[in-house]
Length: 371
Image (cartoon, rainbow, N blue to C red; front, side, top):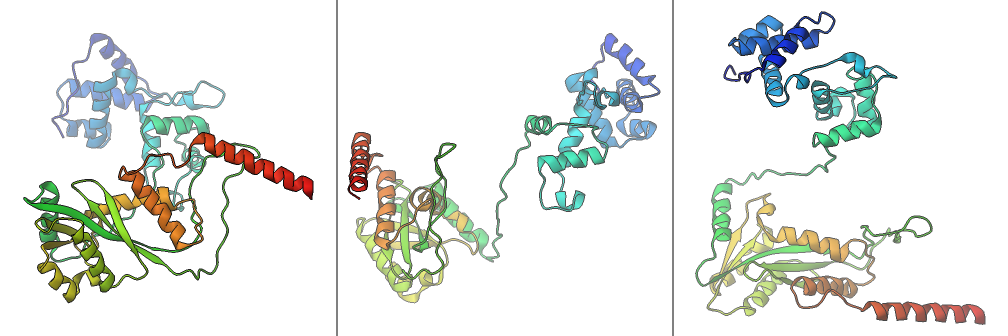
């Protein structure tokens, strides 16, 4: 802590620091100037903290601020924050605002999260600032790199063999085994027939966003998509099943085995779901040149196919309302065909789309005239 020292103080800066030290009505400037002058004189930071009645951490922060921005970075004039006068927020005030914004709202305001208006109200009530607009407060937060972020979930693995399984899978990802092929496998689903919310582009005014029906009963059953991600080719493919038992899992493994030469060893990364560990499945695996790599419990993030499911859900399911499982399956297969490079991005040309819209508009106009 005592290794932090003030840089060489130029004569004009020293004269200004001495003037700041004599400011009896501004104790903040006076203590800041004393810190810099004592540090430039070789006094240890702990002794400086005792002399100016501050913490050693604050002494270090003032020294760092002076070394970075000079005298202007440690000045503070409270009357510049009074209403109806030019307001300037110096580094220490902005740092305090940032510190409040990054603090827990539950302990400060008894709410689960901040908003810009609530943050401003708290800053004014605590007399950190006299007045600040919402736009300027937002600007200060952005300058400090403070932005709204979505919270995330995390689950620790309680698998006693976590390290062994983790290292085994990481070694597999790091280097392709000789004569082998690395494949990540997992189930995508269950897939219901239900409207799914998403995002769409819309104009202001009369153009409304897409709307979906509400469903209270879903009697169409579910489907399960057993998917495989080939790390060598980067392709994603799979099969749809009505159930998800060890029989479907074994049938999928047999289908996967037929896609490659028997001389190639399939190194398959899977989770420890019950059907994956069935005795019949393990017996078949040992006799067909397939090796299973089980991820640790509650550590599905080790399976690289999970990141592929995010894009699949966004571009094939979100903002959709499929009325049959075949329609939903066709949409997923269409996305995978584009992703794997088997088709172009355009399913229908723009000119054909315009002609179809004009034809539909004419038919609707003729029907309205006839009625």
